[in-house]
Image (tube, rainbow over all chains, first blue to last red; front, side, top):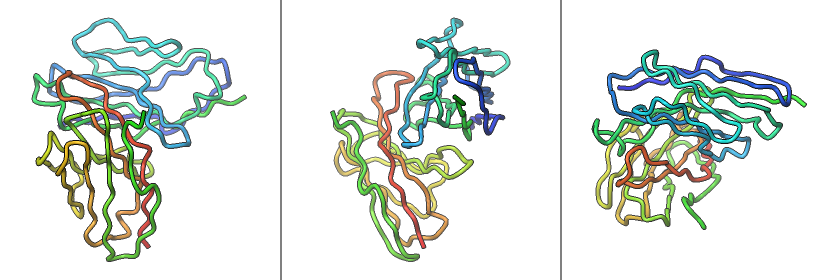
Amino acid sequence: AQTVTQSQPEMSVQEAETVTLSCTYDTSENNYYLFWYKQPPSRQMILVIRQEAYKQQNATENRFSVNFQKAAKSFSLKISDSQLGDTAMYFCAFMKSIISGGGADGLTFGKGTHLIIQP
Amino acid sequence: NAGVTQTPKFRVLKTGQSMTLLCAQDMNHEYMYWYRQDPGMGLRLIHYSVGEGTTAKGEVPDGYNVSRLKKQNFLLGLESAAPSQTSVYFCASSRADVDGNTIYFGEGSWLTVV
């Protein structure tokens, strides 16, 4: 079974600063996908970014980027030029590849990091 | 553009009562899921379905039953509600034909058992 660990329950930074959220995972699989989801106070789950384990290049989406270290099983999220609207819970999540018999059993989530952007 | 719709959004139950949460998706997705979210615990998978007429247990299935009689609907039942089932429940769905496909979530259903 997979496990996902987010070691920072809460973080607080000033607006416009850069912040990095940590995530580590444990798996015996070689083919998998990693995700970061954002959950604002509305509780809606919003996909922020996705990384394929077979790709060495780190995924980026505008101000959001990841640092994927496959050997270290680390998948951190960097938010640049943070904005007040980035205040939310952030969840790191893991999905096995179909090749590994996964996909249908969904995502394994970490416990989340509550990110607060201060004005 | 409805996506994944959950009903009801809020419900208060007494211990021992039963209820059903309904999830409907209009994206023709094969896979559907029920998660629960508790403070400090992230989201945990209750049950999932890979297609019409099939269901499987997730990480925390005890106390819940599910049914997928139609492809677009996935029902989560509580036969005898307990206070430990107070939680926020999320339904989700995804395609089956794309590896690592995005999972789309509903807006959540708040359930309180007193």
